Image 1: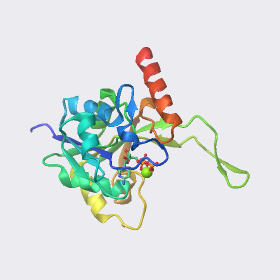
Image 2 (image 1 turned 30 degrees about the horizontal axis):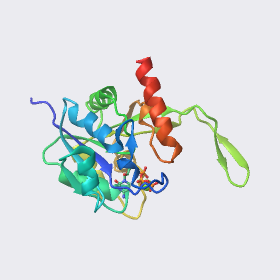
Image 3 (image 1 turned 135 degrees about the vertical axis):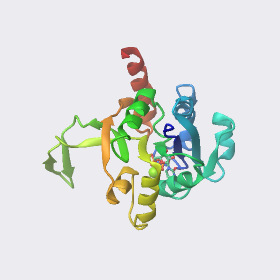
Image 4 (image 1 turned 90 degrees about the vertical axis):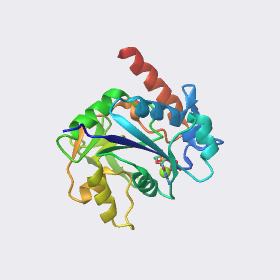
Length: 224
Ligand code: CTP
Ligand code: MG
């Protein structure tokens, strides 16, 4: 039997409104390169990945070219999910797909390896980290504390068997928001297993996250 073929989608069509700045955050410079260039390099250099599709916003073609040169790209939509759908439609030939946020720049080969190994057992796999802080609801004042023993932070890349995630997205109720793809697969009855995530994959969302991402990367590179 031939080995499964793996594709990757990087969703980079957002506006980066919370991050501010003079351009969308995925094109801002981080550790010496435009943010999207980091995960693009990690995915395209991984030996198991044969195809990488970058999903960008209309008008971001020049920014992408300046960031990573000639890349396979498609134009995304108004929501993350629409951008994922554009990426899924553009995959040429694969059995498995990794769906990744451009806003999580520092992706290691080890995380990719863990996800792909997990896909032998289930149609979906995600990297997660335990929560260290106390988690509580808050309205005007602090409300109930939530038992955090089974609470995790879910990161990307999220790995799927391609036919399973395509079927799940096709069946998803368009009116519902989806912040990631694992919830779409689960809603369609697919099991999603968890693998160990990486603090380096924390999402760059707000202005202070740029410096935090660089710090985490520096600390991780020293300790490995
Ligand atoms: N994304 C996308 N298409 C959209 C919205 C988001 O491809 N219509 C991508 C972003 O580029 C990012 C990832 O989805 O890589 C996660 O989204 P988020 O962190 O929310 O990024 P933005 O939507 O760009 O930021 P904001 O919500 O602050 O505007
Ligand atoms: Mg957003």
